[in-house]
Figure 1 (cartoon, rainbow, N blue to C red):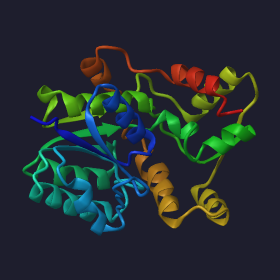
Figure 2 (figure 1 turned 30 degrees about the horizontal axis):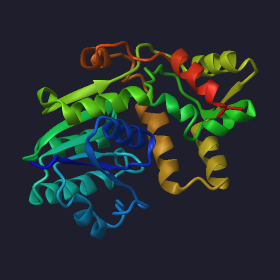
Figure 3 (figure 1 turned 180 degrees about the vertical axis):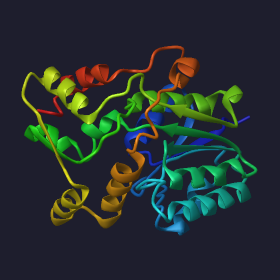
Figure 4 (figure 1 turned 90 degrees about the horizontal axis):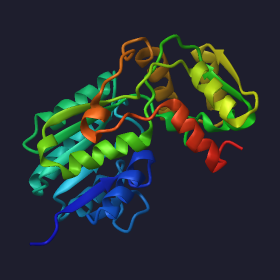
Length: 273
């Protein structure tokens, strides 16, 4: 029998490229899917979906820009319908913790005829090094919208390891796997740990969300990303996620990475220099 083919949607993204690499290292047969892949996949062009899913047994799905956006539920419904019709067996969806839009998309997957997993994650530590907070860290002055809640930031490497486990271990099928880091932290504490690792000052400035978005949009932030930043800082960061889970330890049989672990590893790469 030929080896089952696994597709990775968003194979150039934070989790996608790590999941792809790990599956390849384990000898799995994998199809990388992105807008620039050999077989392209684009959430905004549904004509690309069917070729991307041809002969696929399992698929890891990341949605761009985020499951919180209003159009996500309809896109996920259309994707799941197509996957079912094409004989896909198993779908693993990356979801966001505490996001109503993400929960709506989760239900589409859970209520399908597919075998499924939801990997529901807290805020990525890598947002400080691979996303919108990188330039502020590099410049020594990070500007963020005002916020009050603590967050159990999670290392994307841990998320990827759980996703790979979900894709390759039958006993994990049909479960919501809610993953967090091991500690509740403020953005200020994360900045302080980063500054300590880099042995230089980094200032955190907080401004009203309206002022932040006005400045970000003036610098070219796309409207959908601006909407998402508003959703995350105004609604999701309201305290609803101020708790941790032990999912990493249970599935991977090791502790979840701390922010200090992440900052030490990331500082060594030189990306913050």
